[in-house]
Image (tube, rainbow, N blue to C red; front, top):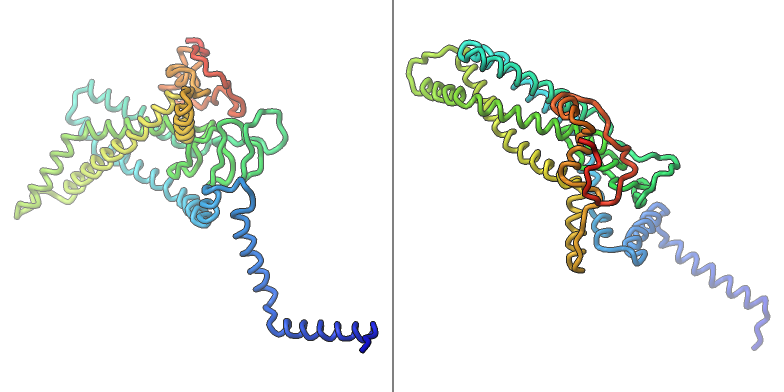
Length: 354
């Protein structure tokens, strides 16, 4: 039996139509197919090339968690700033309304002058540096083409990154000499406001320690007075006396707690400044030191010039008078460099005249 070409073509078309009709009955909606294809693409992207490692897989899986934390931290930044303002204002109000009258009635003129001068200097330093730390931009690398050298490319900004620059997920951009993102400032701590942040921490620690030490006896008297009043059937104190005693106890407990907690943070940052590194660089340098130690080599931080010079560069001290005008007094001077280029030679030399 012979098959003509036309009959063979007709048979093939019929089979094709039947198979198409069978597939059409089980065809899924287009939007479901798109979702399925997209999910397959996401899974395949986890092992797309040989550069993928456990860190990439971990970041991909926990990206929704990181995004949620960044979003919540960004929103709560304003809450934290207002909390700092309210708590600090409450301590200042108690100092003016309760402690200052007691100082005038109890201490000698010399001690009164000391408390008034030191207390107001400390208050000015706290307010100035906190305002500058929150309002000063930490510094961002330029988005347009520039001649400054860069060491890598940010995988999120897809922009060149100069040395010591890191990406902040909360600010959603790269920060020059980034130290960390501080929710209490609602701002990143970077090249242009790192000094303000440290001076604020140091000033607030000194202020809280000053209130805690000088108010210790007042705290003990107020606590004993409230205990005696609670145990006595007939209260010998008025409502105003109770509020004064409770205010002193509140001030002493809050300032003592902040002095210990913030003091530890301030000491840690002072150690980092002495080493010429940021919080992020501390972890990176530690890993690099361990890696080179396995090879029998010693790692040296390329951005450290000695403890004294590191402090001079950080504080912007260029001559002796700057220790007073730029350190002991509020100063809005800019850092000594632009944050884009750094001297990469770890030379232990006094590059700033004393």
